[in-house]
Length: 403
Image (cartoon, rainbow, N blue to C red):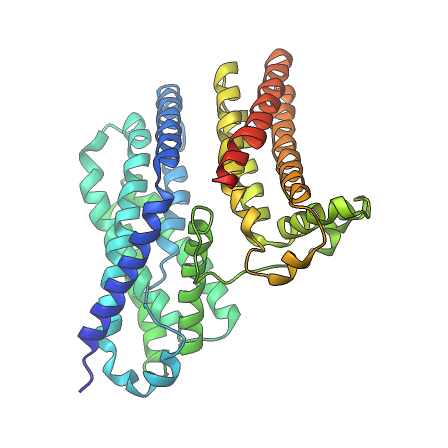
C-alpha cells in the first residue's frame, strides 16, 4: 500500500544528507576564514553607516524593497525526481499530505532566511524608529504569515503553464508584499493592513477556484526542482567533484574575438581549450562576473585605502580558488589525452589563463579606486594585486594541482 508519509521522509532525509555531504566541502577552513573576514568587515561598515543615517532617511522603503523580494520568491521544495512523472503520477490524488509536508518544510527553511534578513535590517530601523527592537518579534510573526501566503499562492500558480501568468503573479505579489511591509514598518493603521490581508485572501481564492480541478504540472515541478539542485551542485563543484552535476554551456559567439587573437600553434592547444571552456561554461564565466561585480561594489564603498586593497586581494583569492576546478573540466573526455602535446604546455596554459583572469579583475578594481580620485591607493592596489596574482598562480595553484 502506498504511504506518502514514508515517501516524503525518504526524499527529505536523502536531500538533507546530500546537502550536508557537499556543505562539508564548501565550508572548509579557507572559506570559513574568508567568510568571517567578510562578515566582520561588512558589520563594521554597516554599523558606521547606520550611525550616520539622517533622521529623514526612508528606512521603511528600503526594508520594503528588500523584504518584498524575500517574500515574493517562495518556491515549494517538492523533492520530486524525473522518474516520478511516470511511476508516481497515477497516485497524484494520494499526494496531498506529501505536498503539504513539502510546503511546511519550505516555510521553515525560508522563514529562517527571512529571520536572518530581518535581523540584519532591524538595526537600521531601530536607529530611526522610537520602537527600537521591541517590534522585532511581532514583525517577524506577521511577515512569516505573509510568507506562508506567498508559498500557498506560488503553489497554485504552478498549476498554470503560461509564462505570462507566472510573470504577472510575481509582479502583483511583489507589489502586495512591498506595500504591506512598508505599511507595517510605517506603523500604519490596523484597518489598512486588514484591507491588504483581505486582498491577499481574495487573490489566493481566485487562483484556488481556477485550479482546484486541474492536475499537477509534473514536468514543470520536476524541472524547477532540478534547476534548484543544479545551482547548488554548481556551487559544490567548485570545491569537489559532483557526479550529479550536468554541465551547461552556451555558444557565446560574440566572445570569439578573444579567441581569434590566439596564435594557431601546438603550445596553445590547451590554452585554447581552457579559454573556450571558461567562456562557454556558465559556471566559470558567471562566477568570475559575479565576484568581480560584488568585489567592485564593496571596494567602491570602502572609504580608506588599506581596506580597499585587502578587499581586492580577498576577491582575487575567492575568484582564483573557485576557478581551480577548471583544470579538471575535461578529465572525463578521453580524446583530450590523445593530443600530441606535452603536459608542460597544459600547465603553462592553465597558469597563463588564470593569470590573465585575475589580472583583469585586479585592473577593474584599480580603475574603480582611480575613479574615486585616490591615485596613490590605486597604484598600491594594482601592485598588491599583481604580486598576489603571481604568487597565487605560480605557488599556491601549482601546489594544489600537483597534490
